[in-house]
Image (cartoon, rainbow, N blue to C red; front, top):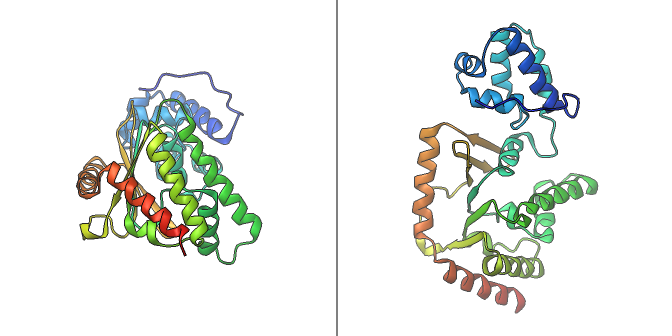
Length: 277
């Protein structure tokens, strides 16, 4: 159970949602655990909503309204609290990323967002948002660059990225952009004490996640989750059996990849290739 903490209910839609959920729960004479049991979740999960640690979820908010007899009150607040600078399908994963102790990512065709340079992100965004006005592209690039601040922390999270060789050989933005991107990966892989980079080579053949990006996150005080993404959509996975299956598959991919040292040697070779016409 998450202990109550002092929050300003009016600091944000998320804190107002948490305050209202707590008010309605206490008025119904329910503990966090009792409400969680009726809503098919844990009392800790309820507490994370009440303390604004987690963003409210539409399906859970609907169940809370039904259990607490609050009409659609929490569902309406949920819609306000879920407004975010990230696409809705990624917003929950982005929030959890801030709390993760470890992040393990597999990138088959596009480099991990936390490892991208601004030039790589900009060209990738232009290709994906072909008809978007320049200011929208700028907003996406700024948001992506803001995510990288995770790596500026002194302790957590630890980041382990397995990148398919294909993602390194697709010339996003052209040779100059890819040269800068490869050098950025080399800098992180050699000098950042919380970043490990491996490359899955072409000769490794088929792997479990060839068609989609997969991010796994573990936490010091919560169960692990997985997130999978393809073009314009993504899904946060919290069901323990599925999360364990993703974890096993990721371990096999990591085992088939080049060692960190050999991976950096390949990336260095590619950086030279992008330098030489």
